[in-house]
Image 1: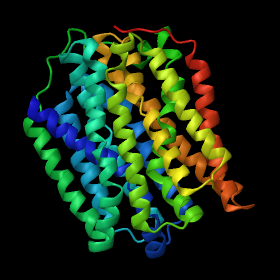
Image 2: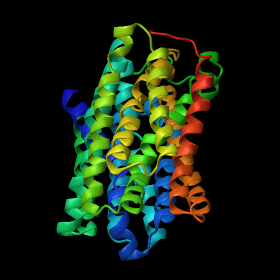
Image 3: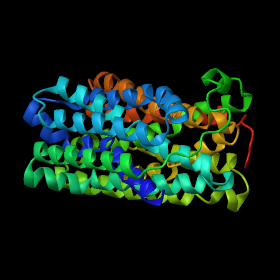
Image 4: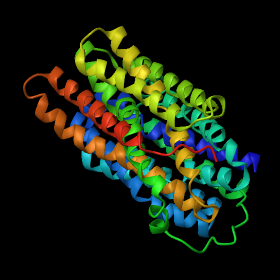
Length: 390
């Protein structure tokens, strides 16, 4: 199982990469195939929406089929095929289709790991193990920054994507060979998402799940690139370096969140105050979008660090879900997180196009304001949640 979990972690590195690499290719894709910021926002949104749409069937498959076949088949067909199509793209439409396919391929990877954690490890270790998986997997964020920019400049973005198609296919085959499915719970065949929605404690957690991940995912995965290029005139390599800083901050934040529920004996308030700090950083970006390069990169890093509460929120929600619904439970929570990021990408594209008609800076300020307002609403609702360390 250790080797299987290691391969699932490697697959999650690819998942993190594919949601973030468009930011550093924005200039190349615009010049080569005419894909502007709104096109890339739409393509990125398709990745998140396809990923989110797969969560309910993935949850069913994890409970009924197991993580081995669920993760390996979807990763092979979706990521391998989608990356190959991306490498051959000649216009924004092909980029969108490729990103949707890649989203389908990435959809089971983290949840397969979480399913194994939920079924084979003590509940008190769930947040720490989940944070460790996300933290290590977030190395993909780093690869999607300066290393991807360097690869695109040396061997071209098409060749880089072709190599990634082959690598993801090899990892998928390794998962099929090495991952071992946990024993099925006695009631694995019973229950549905409707049973999950009958749990009152879940309802106050779902809104923060919907809005907490979206800002860091959208800013790191897409908007940081055009923002830093347009406002501060950075080159592709410089954007890669700046997003590398944000990526490191997101990894550090994920690992920092991991043990805090056991340190402070609370999950609710760790999540609340952490995301409150992320809100402060995003609010500062809204107020001073042109406050200086060092300030902007620092605030982006702060938003990434304090916004890395995803594993802790999943642990909070998982604590109310019975074992026989573990697969469907964690994937439903993930649906809200990824779905929120996807909706944000679809909203921010037209929002930027409308707001930037007055000035470019107004467009980016509107994006930061949108994320700040959404996070504020989510935090207000989350105040009514019930704490639980179970």
